[in-house]
Amino acid sequence: MARKPRIHIPGGVYHVMLRGNGGEDIFFSDEDYGRLYLLLQAGARRFRYRVHAFCCMTNHLHLVLQVSDIPLSQAMQNLSFRYTQWINRSRKRRGHLFQGRFKALLVDGDSYLLELVRYVHLNPVRCGMIDDPVEYPWSSYRVYLGEGELPWLTTDWVLGQFAAECSEARRQYVNFTMDGLDEGYRNDFHRGESDSRVLGDDRFLEKVADETILPRAIRPKLEDIVSLVCRENGVVQGQLANAGQQRLVSESRALIAWLARSTDAATLTEVGERCNRDVGTMSSALRRLEQRALQDAALKHRMENLKRVLTERLEILEA
Image (cartoon, rainbow, N blue to C red):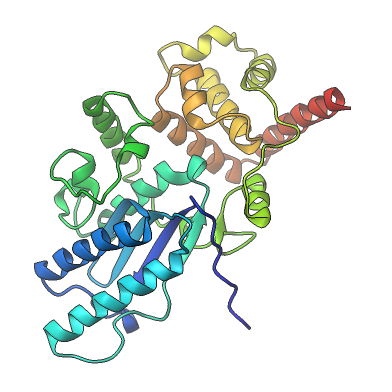
């Protein structure tokens, strides 16, 4: 079967993975990590991509990149070729270093960037190498915490979704990361469902298919969603912003986040502002709700029914 072509969307966010040939190591010394850093710096300048996160494991590499108008394939071919040259020269070896072509998953950044960056930073923890990601020197996690600086690494998009003030944003990001310590391997961050090259809902898939981003003809307002969920759950809207973790109120916030994302009504940051919660808290609440729905058919049915009611009302208004 022929390989599917790479998807190039200017401004798109990709989870990129490069693995050692036959599972063999690709890093052999501290100098090798330093060389890769230099190549990423040169690549960011030449190919105009942004590096939002990375993690260098012994035999593979994770990158979270946002591309420009230059296709990702050009940048990654240059990176893998030049790094292979470096290893072959320094190790006096020949042949391929990486296993086949790189893997890349186009990700809906508005919905998944925070969780993807956390997932990449927690890779050494999942592998049992460390207990706390701050212990690992070869990822971007320490830079996110202000412990070191890499001029070619972009942290403002992620941290800016937690707080405007840098130290507070870092504190909240640490809490968000620690909240994911028990999260295991996520197949969705390696392979999409409807299309193995893309991770996103139907709305995002439609955008990708059109190779452009257009506003939806029918899109609810966030307040429409808040009103619907609060009425269905018997929750007063003012309770959404209150402190505390009452079950029904917490579930209502998560339902609002799910409906807002699945209908493209608002970002998680906007939902968080409406509910007086930071984006990390909203992201975690949404993930827990989705995990519950996988096990609870009644909850899943209720979520889909709320979405159907919301959509039907919009269609009536549009008619």
